Amino acid sequence: MIDLSVIIVSWNVQELLARCLESILNGPQLVVGADQASPSGDVPTVEIIVVDSASEDGSPEMVTRRFPSVRLITLDSNIGFSAANNIGLEIARGRYLMLLNPDTEVIGDALPRMIRFLDENPDVGVVGPQTLNPDGTHQSTRRRFPTLWTAFFESTWIQNLAPRRLLDRYYVRDVPDDATADVDWVQGSALMTRREVYETVGGLDEGFVMYSEEMDWCRRIKDAGWRVVYLGTAKIVHYGGRSSGQVVARSHIYFQQSKVRYFRKYHGKVAAEALRLYLLAHYAIQMMIEGVKWALRHKPAMRRRRVAAYWQVLRSGLRAR
Image (cartoon, rainbow, N blue to C red; front, side, top):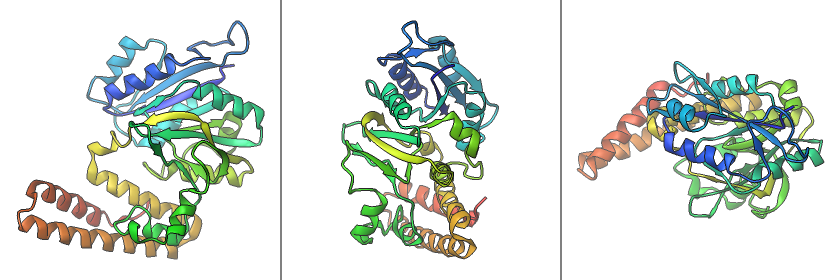
């Protein structure tokens, strides 16, 4: 059996996808594309699955030409991050399954290190690596589950006004970056789990088109009795937001809809509705501020784009799917 299936959902990020694939193929202590164990029996075997979400930048052709060992699935339309990952999970053959963003690069032996950690800790259901920014600084990807109070501040325009201890707890700032520690969830830019976990709790909830899907998945996994662990000694680089940056308004909508959906699912309808109205008020205020700056001719092109994006958010109503 293959040790690890790496699933990469890609949309119009050809150059970054190529760098990501090269970082896996050139990594040490791995046999990529093999159907059987390595001759020595002590080197993990890995398959790479790329699910292309109807890219128009030549990504599928690039994968076919440059990376023939990669299993390529091409979709006719962009069906969303969660649904596309589920397609990859369904066909994966590995005893471990990894979700990896195309705008990442694997550093050194991160993948075999994560495999060994799962081998040695059978009660761990999910492991996530330390994530770095392109300049080498730490990128926070470990979390505790949010409270409603956290949601009113985190990723809003008033985040800087939040009580320090509130966000310190959410971002797990009490744990050193290179530590190994139990957390509530890790970001889906790089997340490894067990086949047994997938077969028990199922795949990603496709109601989360993108964003919060990994938080929901980790919560379901923890509820089923497994641990979620941040492994600071395994490292990747994450360039971040290259796919979602192509559709700014939809990214705002999906991000906030997913947040509302999560709170409706785990905190009830009243909490979710309060959060939805609160977020809509934020966008209405920001749209007015941007409109005034537009009228004053301060960076008018940027202000016009923001007003249009925020108006689309308001029109959506941020109603959870």
